[in-house]
Length: 95
Image 1 (cartoon, rainbow, N blue to C red):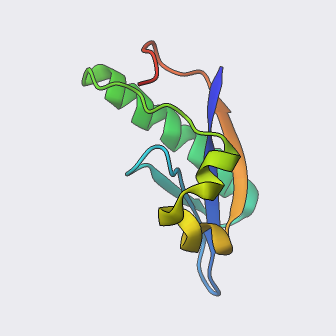
Image 2 (cartoon, one colour):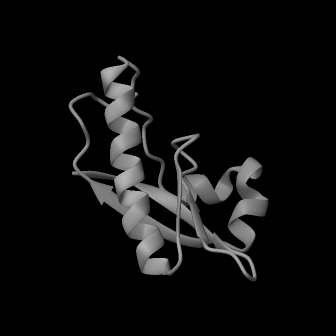
């Protein structure tokens, strides 16, 4: 079982949005935090399965410390809830 760090954001009057810094293009949302994280797990599993089906290497998940030090994510991290989403990774090794 593997996992990726998820960034959860919520603006006034919107749903919770979820993105994965190590899996560009994989996003999800939900009306509650719990729903957003459940949906994020499903989105991540589907996204990684499509990558495997397309023969693409899976991205290697970084630690929270590595993500925290990434200057391109400074703005995203400033107001994010950080969560770890675990799932059974489809058959392929991480890049």
